[in-house]
Length: 128
Image (tube, rainbow, N blue to C red; front, side, top):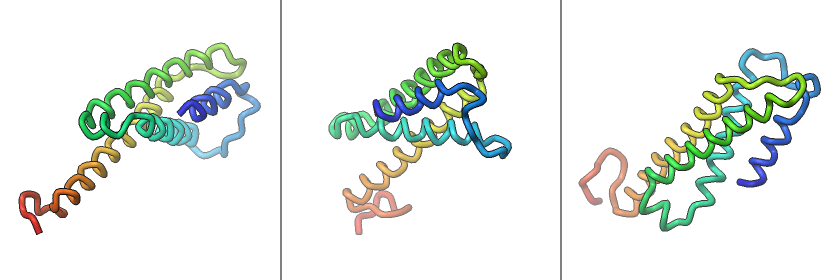
């Protein structure tokens, strides 16, 4: 998690004219979505297994808001970097990446718990 945060910080500290991204529309937002998705995944990994199993929803909520907070501070940091400017749309992309990872983590966690209980697919309540 710290490594991902450091990587995001270093990338956002690059001057605007020194960063190379392909000239595809929205590629920078996709990069934000991906970077903060990875940050969310590593943050989820940092929680203890017991905490994650007992408080899955709270774990995701804390993770997403942690990523949102880091995204806001990163945009503030960019306001001091020549050629860079803070963007609310970047923050939305950061939040989206973290939120997507949290959502899919909860879905996979629910599926795994269903398998442990002997429940499969849409047959909730029936044990096979």
